Length: 509
Image 1: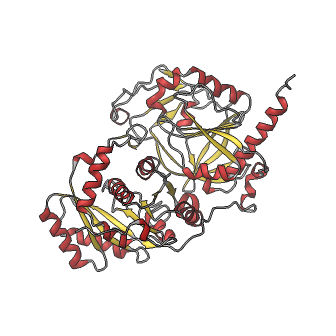
Image 2: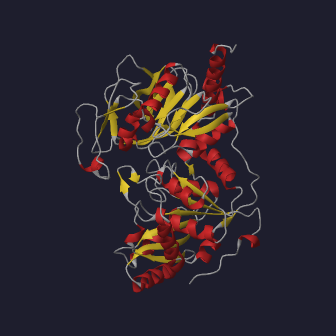
Image 3: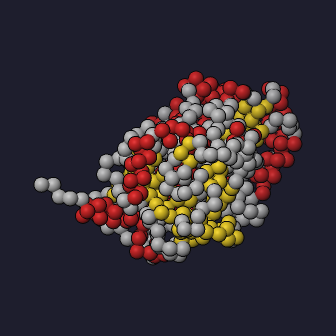
């Protein structure tokens, strides 16, 4: 079944290939198959560039672990086709093959008619063929109708192959092959993967456990690679990829006219980079890689730190970025790190620009009202947690506590419009992002400033984006690629703070 993949030395430079691993629905095994293909391709000596369709943060972490390269989100609704195409070209330019993991079902996006936000949209933008992963459990000849429907639903999307997952036996796989080969012209069966409980990755309320908490051991990857090699024709997978001409390393650049609505904050002067401290550890691991790239391109120097383990902020930082994650599962450790909490409070009191989203926002509240038992990954989903006194005091920048819920509080795309000048841009700036959490904060006092108007598919959701001094916090994960002015505005805010701090500092005698 297996065919030889040419070694790296025999490939033509400038002919990077790409494939998309998609599925009819969530839960079909996209992530496992995508990881297995990435691991096998890497072991063949190929440079693999990983990507993830949509706003997901967890799958990209596993992509990074396997390939050794950052995995980049591609989202047509948040960022638009132009940005998606250019960032794909930028991040894939030195790779031999780009492997893009899809989101939900192949054609699932923001609505029943539009393709925005779907894997199919990204397939068109990047010119990548689709390999459909079908969970074949309890199915036989009917899979041919499913595959045929997906292949013919949109002729501009090329479904080049199908991988059947969770097959029960060799005979089951034979029936599936025969059905597709007899009915679906142009769609090749690339493999049939048997059910295997050893390939299960544990999950919790926001999805899989993060790679920071669950780094896949070598034995897991060895077994995964073995399963893929034995059951998927890697030669056909390679042949299915669309070759791309040399893209020249295009980089998304900021259009000064397009950035105009970001106000005066979008102006970034040349000179020494502004050092921005970015929280990255087990508690804060949800950040779009392109947000960091765009900050660097705008003149920001990114330095990572751990609110869990470090006792002070990075030396010379003039801004802080607190991304999302799972602070609720590390609330005690965060609370006990008094030195770091003090350092962040003092920075905010001094006027340092601080941007916090979702988990980062929770870190800035009074604390967590819910105590999720260690190791009980289902507790936030299955049981209502206590709502008594705060059990894990946090920074208290915002005078509310956070309460964990048994049901999801919010999920979906969001659009924000700035109602005032902020560290990310001026009044009227419009940006897009995503919201997904199982928590809520107590009612925010009216005295706390609101910097956003929040919208969901045109419906006004009211004010959000809470501000204290130069600290801006929200449940929304903004993608800086959605608005050209966000990254330059934040860097400019950090540079202004750095200059003011220098002026205020007493001269040494």
